[in-house]
Amino acid sequence: MSESEIDHGSPIPVYRQIAALIIADIESGALVVNRKIPSESALTQRFGVARETARNAVRFLREQGYVFTVPQRGTYVAERKPDETTG
Image 1 (tube, rainbow, N blue to C red):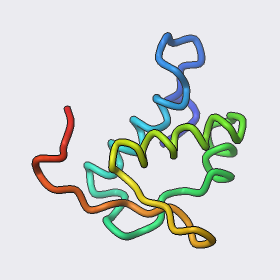
Image 2: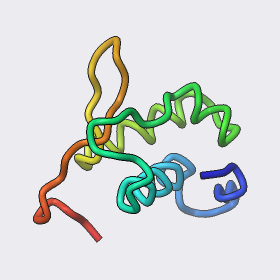
Image 3: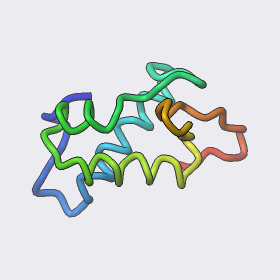
Image 4: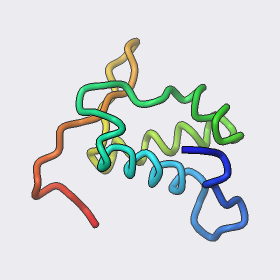
């Protein structure tokens, strides 16, 4: 994932672009089940976005079932069943 992969002029919201990059890393195995994803702070630095944008990306991933958050611990890659995949 890199900032150059974000197109600020795209009609696709930046938070969705960030989420798509994280989903790609999950699906490729670069991010592993039950391991942390980058923190909101790391995402803001990596992509040069506001914290709320990073928070929205993580929220979207959680709503889609790609990650789960443990309070005071972080956000982790969720185990997904084959019938839960979208695409």
